[in-house]
Image 1 (tube, one colour):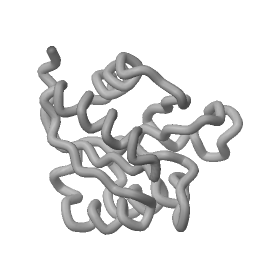
Image 2: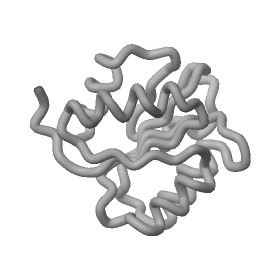
Image 3: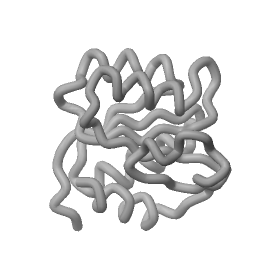
Length: 120
């Protein structure tokens, strides 16, 4: 369906969403690594920074929120592409403009595919 290649890091504290995103992204031909929160996302990124083509990060997570996570990822690798995800609109989220894309929850699999294709 898609000629997309690479590894995507998905960080979301909602298991059902992580599963849905993993299925959709794997169907697109992508390798998916999942994190349960912002700190876990940072750990995984540190270990695999060079192989991560894109990170999709939920803005509201326990421990470390998505915006703090985005800032950390950009410190480690300024060129990493990041899509933020939230139930709030992009305009309501301070620093959302620092991301390369935005998905407003709830979103359908087609919106996820479109956002990823736009960056990969």
